[in-house]
Image (cartoon, rainbow, N blue to C red; front, top):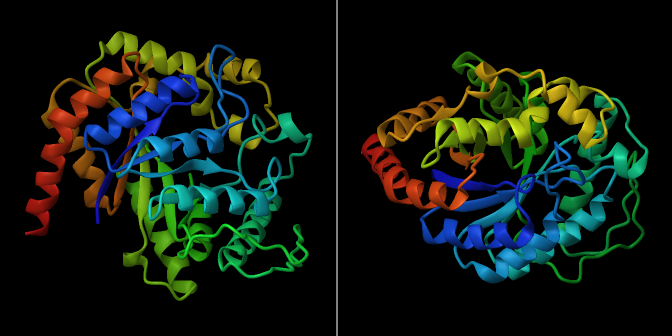
Length: 335
């Protein structure tokens, strides 16, 4: 089943604004809402509300959209038992609508808050241990976990949904997509690359799923896509540069860059040609063609993120002009 989502830009807007926007996204026809789970923003001028407090409020204000993070690192800043409790509570507040995406995180959020920053392989092993513990806890029974990195002693989620929330696993390169397929209930990645990259990434994800005895066709494959609609191109590019340029430098994910000032300094070298590797257009047909290319590659959940600055114009415009055409395209393809 194909879903279209809205990414709440917690790096750009405060929690009250984002909450009203989430309600508007549901009313405009989006199927899911995800939010970053960060401690720091990418730039000092940004925001950084606590994702789990916000998701609880969003659960109370909405009735239909699926809600979750994109993504959480349940390994350093959090103990995975606490994150299991958080997403289980969200699943009780929003029955059948909660999900979580997990990954290895960034020093910007983890080292800054804990002073810890293992290498990528060490963080990946922690994610595997964390996901294993979370699944045990979702069963609702006492868990004495003796993992490589995490332990619990007769820990139990006394507020636990009847069905475990799905755990998506983030992957930004094919090398980690097999890992995501092996341990996850779904995949989350980001746009901005060529089709051949995503074909390889999805192939690795499917291979990992088969290794774990799962049917890859049954697993959701989500991608976050940067788009602009209903905003002047120059202003949208300026907002993207201001709030998200730091996230477009690979070094930020590999090295111990842990302050928004350092992130912004790295992002300053990003040129407009790189920033514009997205869909900046006010033609609905171009947006439909852009999205259909990812559906044709095999993605099932398209999560649209607009850099603004008028987020309400984007939500209303996409809901009115783009989402209905996309759904019609999906129906036509299935017929």
